[in-house]
Length: 278
Figure (cartoon, helix red, strand yellow):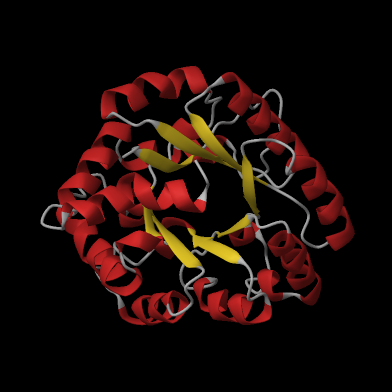
């Protein structure tokens, strides 16, 4: 079984504009490219990755597709298309879908001033175009503003295959579940919705986090979605804000101890192979 990291990024500050990324981002305010990640993947025993967009522009997508051609371990690319313009979305998807590793898109909705941006009528029309190409839509659901829209999206675009990034950033810092758990359960009722066990260390927001802090949220996700709809992701290089690649990988595996091997295999690679056709 392949081991797959379904959520990692690259960015080059000299070549692509990343409006959200400035000096206030601290250690991640610099260029990150494949040569830096490769030895960390090898050390962890990761076979393939899913390279995910970092900017709402075509330059970032083109850069990722180029990198995917140069590095065999990049198994899939999740880029960007302008959902507010369904016609342009269709034209770009027609082009991108010819690339052997393009598998879907996302929009940084958590950076939009309107927390309901994703349920605008024109965006819904854009998502219908995406579904027509059998591409994945990744929902950057940062609780409490976006996860609640998942059922609406599935009702309006029933053919859409949706992946919730980072388990929607649960309130780990507060050691709560509450409405987050209710909204995750509502999303999980739709069989086309998947979720990434990723980004949890930065949701914890403290340097002393451990697998024990992440485990209740991972356990809830397994109980709600099932292992065959969950996927590991490192969220590198964002993860270095509260740890590093090796620490995230080790903590995730520790939190999964006690599950059947088939479930662990699904979360660490099997589900991703199916969803992203790797």
